[in-house]
Image (cartoon, rainbow, N blue to C red):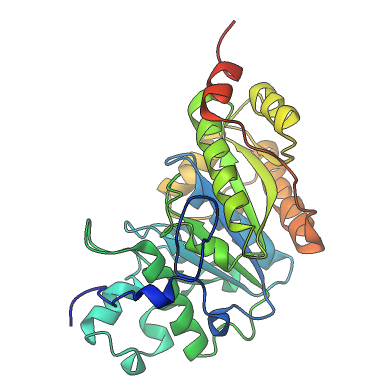
Length: 301
């Protein structure tokens, strides 16, 4: 069987899924059930996986049953939770020639810090398939094994700032989308593009933009100026702490690092953010800028 080779027929392409694109619609049968579902986006290298894993840990410390799904071919979203690099769903499906009925949950899902369940969806080999198919197969497998029925929170950690149809697929499942950005030109520019992708998906799916998370930044003046101009809310701020960098090197969450005032403050901020999202973050009506507009907006005086 060819890897990631399900034919997409014209009748499966039902109308437009967002401005200027044609996407395969989500089968209603594949919707995640009653869990609160979040998708985390942001520029590559901005700290999405670290943010996602610490946020998952914070949800678990609030007593929630959490599932984190990494959506990146390098499958390193959850290793600070599990202390190891896990096989991907696509890897294990390939070993059984894509006969999903031969898989067991323990083949692809692993328990991490404080009971957080971890899955790495992975991605297709370069140039051979679509990330959306990978996400779809992962959700189908989880539903087939009834692994979503007792989950309170599902968190998708999504590849870089890619906003094509494939890696925008988690937006079809999510209730709220979060964007991680630093106080710099490149990540704010990427965040603006991601906002547009979320806005497009919101035309056909329940997903709404919750707000931004300022990460790796001592100051937030530029990111707040952008938020004021577009209506995007800042939900949390995590400074560029060396302890956060070292936690990733130690393959652990920030909550497992030695206590210091700075570490404790960051851990409390993660728990505050988790409580805010669980309570139901109001959707943001933020409007992204045009590329030329944001380029001039973020220019130096």
